[in-house]
Length: 334
Image (tube, rainbow, N blue to C red; front, side):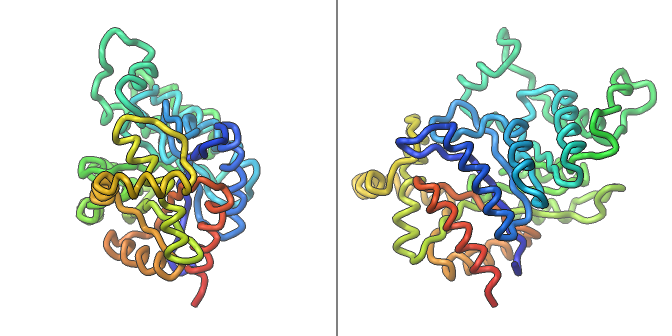
């Protein structure tokens, strides 16, 4: 592939299917992606979502790594405010020991859910959790790098179970603050364009402010994009209707499984203003292989991205497989 491509999998649950089937579809897609030459395969973390089965990256990652052999596998991402930094460090150290040289630990600050579900995830519900992500983040990196200062209270806990292997830490984001943290820590950075399609300036600032470390000398940017590739532009638009309807309903506070195009197309026609509002705040790249390639090349230039990560949601699993296949073929052709 002329542009390095990767996969972000949210394990969509189609209408009429189940979460268990969605998880098995993720294993199938991972095998497919590796065979097609995709570089890495990340799984998301979302909670309380009827349309997504991806609640626990640390559970799904080893299953995917076990059915593949070379593709990098990781979290896209672990929502750190829900967890103890030590527990995350230990879990991903174990994964790195089991699958050396293949594990990515991408971290996010967002809750990955609504406030009600976020409260249910808390161990102590007597008060809101502190907004202390920078401190959590620094502690986690200190465990991974065995970098606590001498005499620190947690110094001895940095002897992690998967040593000498280590996951590669990343920072995820969709706002300027995440880019600043990534640059200060000297980490590779992944920007969620499918959440906020105005991140090119964030990526530029990240590159300019990047501080080299012993483990990474140069900045590295992934841009993550929502993409649906079909046999034709019209076919792709039909397939994309399912995700568009699901996200419109989500923004309206209604959780649904991924609907069939036969359900979604009439809904979008009836709710044209809501569809237009969705398109204004979320970028979908939809079309035939040639159409999508041109758009992704432009997106990569916009972000000066080293890699593009693709998230694809369709009702039918075979359509999702085919979308990634068409995309790989488009970028492998001369």
